[in-house]
Image (cartoon, rainbow, N blue to C red; front, top):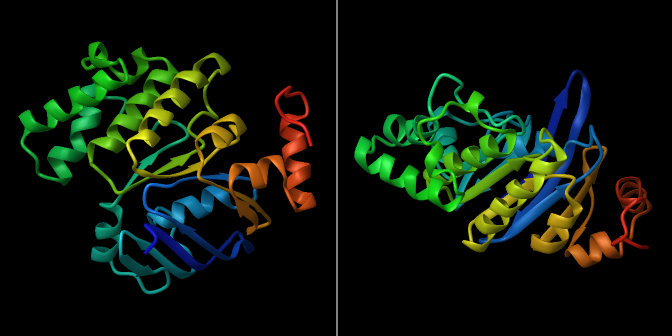
Length: 253
């Protein structure tokens, strides 16, 4: 059974079809990278998985729990969200809380874990990303890369079955992208299931088990990084990759 399975996901926004019956299957422990141009529906698709932006129709299955997008109940959505963590494009940290509190808030408030246990978990995660010395700092005192690494720690703290990454490096200065990608690669090595919306082709090639290319609200093609990135079959995929990597020395078609 797949860890994540989407069936016939449809979504309209502003009177337009953003998702047109998307089917996607993600195996347990797999890293799936979703590529596509702006407006292709990739971020909307990601947000339908944890019902931050519910689809109009179709079913979402995470860790054996299936929820109907058109007929979902609050308790079902909460149960599904407990199985997922999310890392946002713009970090999504509480500006008025310290790094430590940003990570422990979900553990103490939502999971009802004791403060001492929650803080121990937070420090363990911060140690792994070399940010333990920033536990008492506020987001405004951190670089964008540091904030995003805290965001990843916050997602991991809840021990989700799946982590969703919504363009985690797009808001970063170029020199900070590497540190976040390094953290994401380390997360992938733990065996957790990851679905990543990104334009980082090198990350997709190195880490992904499956690459999905979307355009116009549909999946144009999917396969291994070698199949989709190195040998795309569809002209739309080829055109997109060339537009991103036309100046890259490590990509040739």
